[in-house]
Image (cartoon, rainbow, N blue to C red; front, side, top):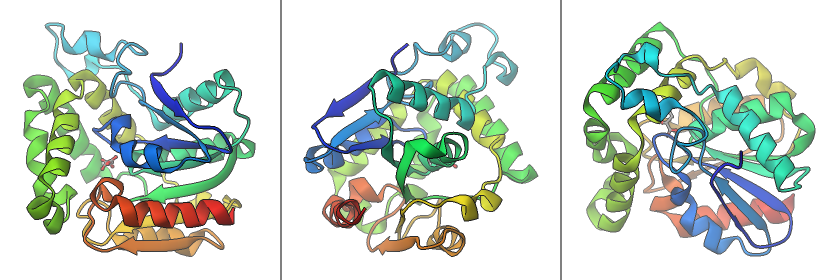
Length: 270
Ligand code: MLT
């Protein structure tokens, strides 16, 4: 079944993979900007409008709200969904650009389907797997979201997701992020949390990445710090790290001009 997706423009393909708990609308400014490319932005499994692809949502509305009742959306399954979408759209190879959770999916794509990845753009990435504390915290959050819905997640937006300048000067960005979070299906969110808890440690995969790689980090990202990005830069030969000032975890929405400029420069050079 086709994943809900945007597909705009013509030219070399670039696929934009959103973060958690967001959806493809977070790429609006990039989709508008990257003319000269075919830009594809899907909603990953269980998120955005992609609630039909999986039964995760049915279980969240059932009487049994335990985590066990929620199927898992692993990073590998999400990557296989993206590869299937590429088949449907007759795209052999693409530049894969992910943000945070989207980077986990990008790491899976290049691990499983290396020939389909022309280049990587990793925004707010982290390579390490989840330790026991992170697994426990993700499980607690999955349980909570099933019990209470997405409301509690809104707190983290101004605390750790966005830069101070964004919170102060860009109420439209804060409103868009809040709307995305609140629209997320609780069942899909829980399934993705479980998937992220089980993700592979990608650290040892990084030296195998042989495609041009750009890493973009928000200077004030409280979720994935520039140090997480440096860890990756050191391990992917020839990769380049750009840190954007006055930007947090959602740097592409917070500083779209700076982000687009960096991205376009990279795309031109590949
Ligand atoms: C994201 O933005 O995708 C999340 O921060 C990913 C995560 O929870 O690891």
